[in-house]
Amino acid sequence: MLPATGALAQDPVIPDVTYPSLPKQASSAAGFVPRGWVLEAQASGDLNRDAIPDLALVLRQNDPKNIVKNPGLGENPFDTNPRILAVAFRNGPAGDFVLQLENRTLIPRRTDPVMADPFEDGLAIDRGNLRVNLNLWLSAGGWDMSGMSHTLQYRNGRLELIGYDRSTTNRRSLDTTDVSVNYLSGKMKISTGNSNSDKPAKAIWKTLPRRAPLTIDEIGNGLEFEPKP
Image 1 (cartoon, rainbow, N blue to C red):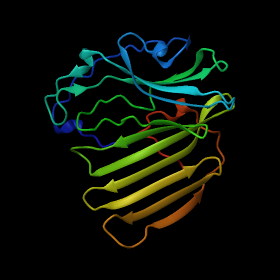
Image 2: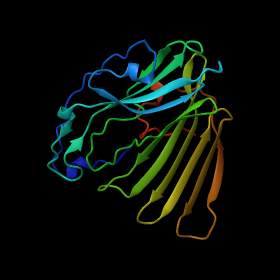
Image 3: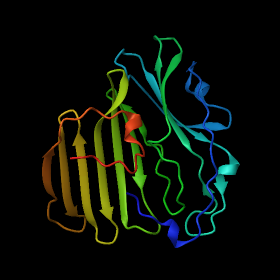
């Protein structure tokens, strides 16, 4: 769980958001961008193994009403505009891109002004897999900073989580914890150490119990996701 920091001062008021439905198909990435939103990041690559490049997109709302005054600690004014992660497959070498999914939770909306923006162009398609990178950093209320990566593969007609990596450093003690999970092999590696020490990190391996693969929607908030050993 993320640390609770709002109790340190009065919380900003986070406006409600109505999410649009994205177009079902478009000739380019720009065609999926609703009015009042912007294309923040995109990646191209073959996700469904038909040798034709597909699209992954991160769209962000651009509404001044979602940039709010913050009476307490942290960023002020505070940008709470939400994001949508979308994937579209190309219909043939020269056809339109057809929307496959739109996800609103993996890249969480900012609600805590002492927490840095978790997404900074962390989107890639690599060897047929979609990778979404997030960061956790707090200016108050917590010492840990983390970088994490969710790797998803198009399997069984859906995007499934096949890999998860997280590197955490405590800024006060400099203790480190690295977690790497391969859901295809069912193995988890946990390494602990200290970035100020010459001693090598200690690693332990765990075997994961057999479970149905998680879809992108079942992951939920990507910052709060915890792999279950």
